[in-house]
Amino acid sequence: MVDDEARVGRRGADRWAHGHPWIFASDVTRGPDKPGVLLVTGPTGKPLGQALYSPESEIRLRLLDPRPKVRIDVQWWRQRIRAALERRAGIDATGFRVVHGEGDGLPSLVVDRYDRWLVAQLLSAGLETRRAEILEAIGLELAPAGILLRNDAPVRRHEGLPTAVELAHGTVPADIEIREGTVRYLAAPWTGQKTGAFLDQRANRVRAAALMPPGGTGLDCFSYHGSFALHLAQRARSVVALDVSGDALARGADNAALNRLDNISWRASDAFEELRALERSRERFDVVVIDPPAFAKSKSAVPQALRGYKEINLRGMRVVEPGGWLLTASCSFHVRWPEFREVVAAAAADSGRRVAVVDYLGQPPDHPEVLAIPETGYLKAVVLRID
Image (cartoon, rainbow, N blue to C red; front, side, top):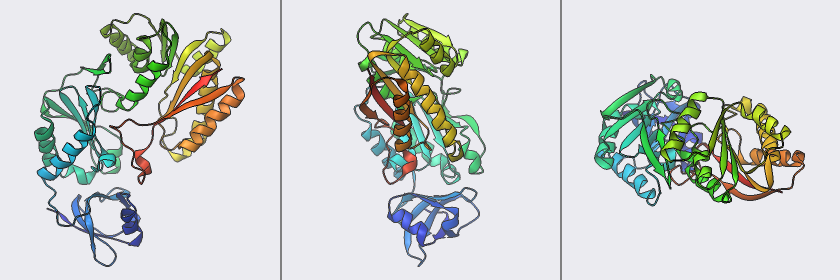
């Protein structure tokens, strides 16, 4: 069932033909005033499929299904959600992403599982018009104890939508204990970053732990709630966790207690300044993790972000024990892989150390990147051996 019809020009039709699900406002030649699920036709009037329509957004249309006559209803949403869940089979965690928007063929929909509870985001005006049937499909397919809508993402304002955190079903506690591998930690679905935790670094945290020699030392920069530090500490003699937020580190300490770990030192400090101080004091670590927040949230911020990435990686390299490891990451979409590799190489050249790339890391299977949709790929990480 569709709500109306929209027509697009040749350039918009070509985007869909080449696998990108978005059509921008400049390529829509006709459309209604209200959001919804629309039948979309090309410049000659040929049906192209059905899409979410957002009349106030620069992203005007998001392709749902290339079949013009298929019924978009509760069963359609259930089938897509079920297929996404099946693709997550084998994930060794009780906290993971069930639906990753465009990466799972469900544009602007995010669904994260935290044990028996779900946190969802409806990030477009078109999707919002189908809220009731989406929530019904989620409930029928995933049977959660509760569903929380974290519709406080700023992107909703570009869609002409209000921002709020709403309980949609059942009850959702303030803190939820989840497990990834052998590590447990508390997610904060109502107040935490993203939907309550940084689920996208799960596989990379396990990778970092594997680098740690038994009885070694670790440094987790931009630690937040200590997720990398917790993994490192299971093998290390001692770990230092840095973050500017004392409140975040307090939650990290709670997570350490949950795992019966007493070998993590929590330091409330600026990572740039602390790394300089560690370098001056000649303190060294077997494994250093640099996982900062996005330095570039827009294209205009990229030059300054690259300077920041070079500086933080240079300082990180200089505090690694000879023969040790640096895992460095960027979650800035606007800083692409070539730029990130170049800035890490520039830091290596200035470090006075021999730096070798051992591995390139990206997003885990529950955050799939579609090659035809660059916007689905944002997380980049490199494992470096520092001699």
